[in-house]
Length: 323
Length: 291
Image (tube, rainbow over all chains, first blue to last red; front, side, top):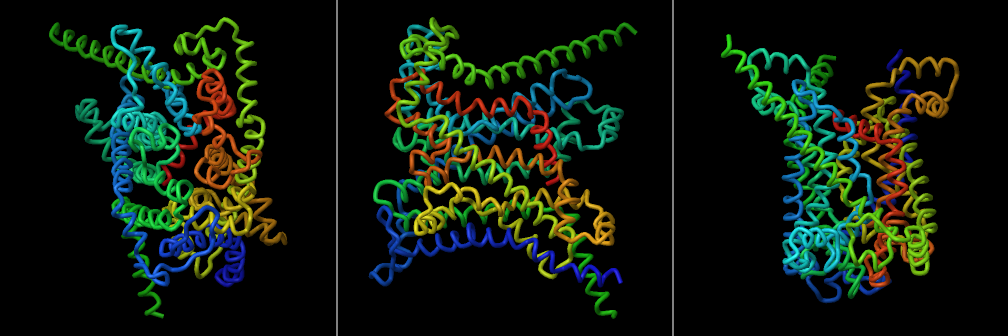
């Protein structure tokens, strides 16, 4: 009786999913396929929409991909993206863990954690574009807040041109990224620690575990899942980094801050408007991201839940056979 | 006995030292967080000459005259704060409404009904979350360009109907909070399925909708990549696109005006954050635990 009723309502499941599916097909799926196709064509030139597949104009089908993969600029952009992400992520996770340990410690009872949490999270909601330009002005040369401080502390030393050297540029971009995200990571981790049963901590305290032992032996293993989750989201965000490096430095300082996403945009919307090469580069980035996230999701997956699902399926199959 | 008291007092001393260290580091980070914004705020009230003398001083001889002049400088070039605010407001508001409403509807379709392709569909939504915007860019741009809609704001609004991330969170929320008995009894009372969703399920989802709406709004407001590519018409630019002009040559020597321009874009966010920070921080935590 009840089963029959559910079957009756099935059509509403389809009906209510239609807006999502339609919008997804038009604005995501079709553009993705179109991008893949363009990667194999000769489409370039501002405002051009006419194209032929490369073999029909006497070229290798994979020429765009070969061009991208052998381009020194692309290599540099790819390397930069990873370097900037790593220098931002290690301290981001480190400080987030440190503050999590401090703010959730029941024995120390730090006051004002609510206020610190709100303050540390704030940069996360500010427009990344604005943050990038603001930091560009702070690290300005010859006048800028940081150079003003340097001169104030040591008048003999002149102003330093941060934005003309490769490593300072990378470090500052990574810092802005860190600045915007450590609070977010911290809030995630604190939520994870609050979710751990207090009895576990009490037991550890009775057994005479000190603060450091408790943190490394109990807290960290318990929030491992959440740490992996922040790793995945941060990695995907990091590989797509655009706003901060684009507005902080653009292609200045010998492409010190050039990321793959900036490369993709610059190929298509500046210079000779090579939509085809840009499409090929974005397909390459897409493949890398999908491969990496699949690996990480595989590690992340809830092993118990996966086992349970498998068992359920087997039971269902057995039941079917039985009938 | 006295040995024990010495030990106890040394533990207490360590506790106090730790506490002091925690407060010092936290306060240093608080200062680090506020420093850029304080500098930005102070320099919005300065003339170019004053900024050149020192960006650090929080004092200006004629703060309000300078503010008026900086405001005038900004408006005399391509940065039009009110146009940018209006465009950003239209895009963010409309896309947030579409985002949360249709995500709730899709999540409800997955949770409340049993249909053949349901598991395939909800599995796909998770897979689709991984697609980076970049890989849609060229195809999307070509499509929009062919349709002649490059400067049409709707092209930045309508795509938010399909927001896999929001659907994912809404589904988590519904699975925990939707009692099918309520839906069943409404059916017995003769309510249609669509009406049940609008009048019973949506009010039930208010907390999840509020949280997701805040993040959708902030995300849309801060978006730069797509608007930068699509919006070339001066009157259609959003605030982040206009902010990118501040780094260009046209404002090169107008230091005070640049800081004011930055300040204008930050102000609405700070005001919103001042009122909603508690919910925002709690909302982040909620998403983290559940995922």
